[in-house]
Length: 135
Image (cartoon, rainbow, N blue to C red; front, top):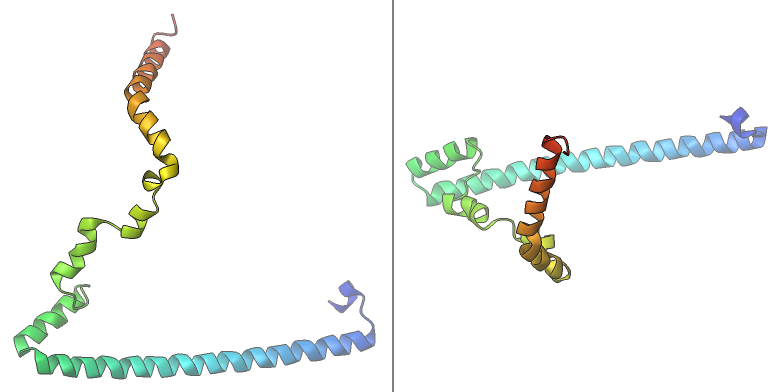
């Protein structure tokens, strides 16, 4: 890289020193992040254990067993009604920001409602003329 950049000896030494310092900092940062991740995993485990203990106090053994079984099936302990609530209504954000709900597009939508059948008829006629070779 030094030859490619045309560095002199002083620049080579300074660049080498800087790159090694950056590498050392990066390694230290990665180790710190790794330790933080491990700590977060431990905290999450402890929180799950505490939650399970609280649930055991609230639920009967049969209810707790059903809850655990439903967790294994991907429901993660949600009540059935809550799980399906969003599916019935659809995604609110999707509906709010869809082009169909923009006032800017309202005129175009109204025009398509009026001219839609007319345009479909023209397209049909055009396709039929292509089928018979245009004659």
